[in-house]
Length: 432
Ligand SMILES: [Zn+2]
Image 1 (cartoon, rainbow, N blue to C red):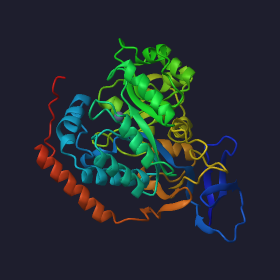
Image 2 (image 1 turned 90 degrees about the vertical axis):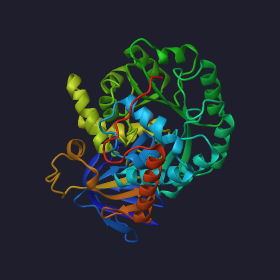
Image 3 (image 1 turned 180 degrees about the horizontal axis):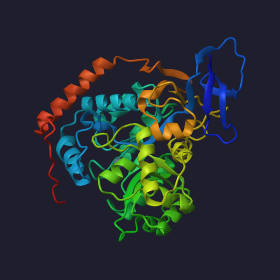
Image 4 (image 1 turned 90 degrees about the horizontal axis):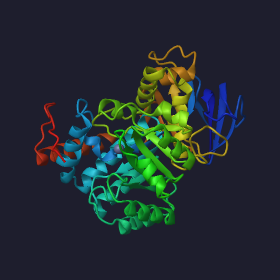
């Protein structure tokens, strides 16, 4: 099975391949085999990529996908309001069906906007049926996903058996893999973090945890004191973390995931993008929660770029694109397989329209993608060589039936939780 992407503007994000005008990419059995100005492949299925930018698919390495049904409802909310609304008010009413349909439509939405790899940071409910529903939803979407089981978040008790159970369930799955969403030292004891990291290593699981500081806490230094910094851990947000602690993360080879829109709008403080780079860390970007922000990486890149420019005039457009592709692949341990248009990697590739009026004429492809790109430009998406979106539409699945299910789910949860859906919901944070 061969596919030839023909005559596109290739922005490979691989320094060895570079950017190529009017060039071809040959995909064979799901893998990129060649990138060159002209490739003869008479037996290949040809996708015309003229008037298209050929780019590695985006990677979102932190999204609480279960909240999809409440998209856009919390645009005005602060973080305490979001926490009260999502964790306090609606979460207890989620059934496995609600988890399934939110996760599936959330994953498809991400794919639609060019996110070929997504980490679902699951923390809706602890229970086999809910967890299995999320896994089944990720498996139903033709995309590369990581089920990051935030065990212990929903119910703070020992979660080892739960982790082992889901781990064995996903054993051998090529596209849907697993990670462990840990509680940080702010949320649990050092002994628990120590034990859980040990089990994660035994099971070959990468870990992700939310962290931050108001300037008085030193969560990273504390982990380091106990020998708990790993090159397989991604620290989410990290706002307020000192430069010294960012250097500790760089030394350990850990990664960070910045959700720029959420952090700025919900009161976390300035994203650490520039300080992380100065400390020797490659930032990555994530969406976090769609009740509050858009679900596409164009928005995340633009927010991070503007925030850093506002602080110190730093960053170049290409930096943002690298955070959202190659650097994120590394943070997920998937850089041998995805994150750039590189021969030998899986063909996770997106084609962006250059003939759309919102971006025409495209003189500088990278600058245009980062400054003016949007999900409406995503014409074609390949995941491991499989064409999952073509001519602007997802190829498989009955979206209208799924949309009806998501609406029914949203309405049922809202009724059960007694929250209005007319725009008047103003959650009241409870003091912890
Ligand atoms: Zn989060």
